[in-house]
Image (cartoon, rainbow, N blue to C red; front, side, top):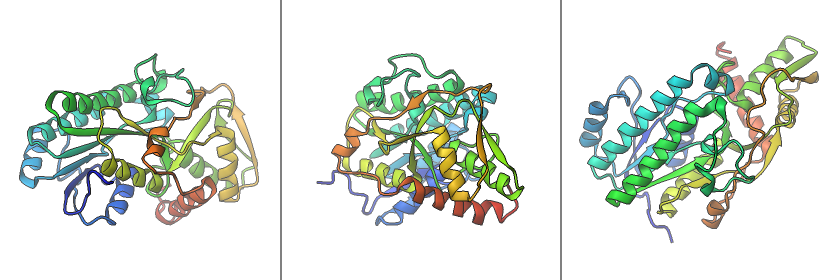
Amino acid sequence: MMIYPLEGKRIWLAGHGGMVGRALARQLQKEDATVLVRTRQELDLADYKATFEWIGDNKPDTVIVAAAQVSGIIGNQLYPADHLYNNLVVAMNIIHAAHQHKVEKLLYLGSSCIYPKFAEIPINEDSLLSGPLEPTNEGYAIAKITGLKLAELYRQQYGHDFISVMPTNMYGPGDNFDPETSHVIPGLIQRIHHAKINGADSITIWGTGTPMREMLHVDDGAEAMLHVLKNYSGKGHINIGSGVDWTILELAEAVCRTVGFEGKVECDKSKPDGTARKLMNSDKLRALRWAPKIGLEEGLRDAYDWYLREVWAGGTA
């Protein structure tokens, strides 16, 4: 039985412009709810007074915290302080303002990078804070851990129905294809498409190609998050994952097939690999009777079609 129906709710989707935010907005269109959004120009989430007043004026019943500064391994290494500060301020401002206005329910979105570098695979929710983090994304991870703990402790101290989910690596329409700050899948799509257009004989990926990454199409991820929002109320966070992982080399080869690039994939072993494997245990999610629907090949085609239509055709990448 659903414990928190969204019918008739006023839902503030903070971070609606990002890939995950857009997917959540698409899923929320299926609900009989009023979705509230504001652009960065309309509302600066780093400004607590503005955030507090906006919630007071608009009176959302539900808040979804999808706003975040995100990057891939390069961006995380170049801007670690920015990732820590910006994500920390946004989490603190929204969660505290939601507390002060007694918002009915809040869903905070974390990231699988919150888990220790050497966590046992598959990674259970209780692995949090059991060991050191991956150094290349420590700033972002610490900010996300703090947001999760804020939601958890406001729940503990004040009895608020604040919950958190930890999504795995997601990809799909609306992704960030910037070569400096993109994640694995969009970075590969952008580079392999360029290699195809330029008639290159090969593309080079960072590291050995052996690290393994779990992937989830963003529409599956958004559906899972709303499923948790409607069907879960508890202290612990819930992993959102596909339950399947691939090596970076396998992902690169799959993108080559999707793009139609027939050149070689070479590995630059002088570059860092990052975490060896990041497969999460999503048993708690499965117990809520949710499972993904979109396979990797179908998902990559969807992501590549969006890239061609919205990014490449627009001359921005």
